[in-house]
Length: 86
Image 1 (tube, helix red, strand yellow):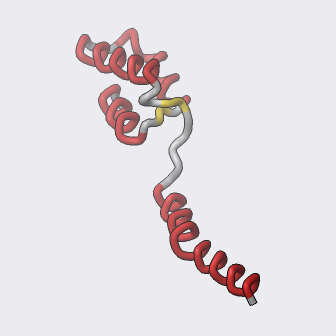
Image 2 (image 1 turned 90 degrees about the vertical axis):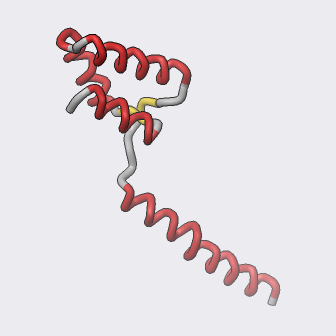
């Protein structure tokens, strides 16, 4: 793991995990100057609320939720709407 990887993953997902925060805190004394700058920028993003402490949901789970919301739920709503009208 590197500061750059943590930064990019956090920036893309909007989430930094507790273990990533702990890793940064534990290794900050060994960071090069540019890594310190990246860690500071990450801290500012957290302070601004653009990156939040949390967990990342795997893409597989997100796709399942999308299928439920976009395909299965509307069918259930339509079915219950027909029986309520009849």
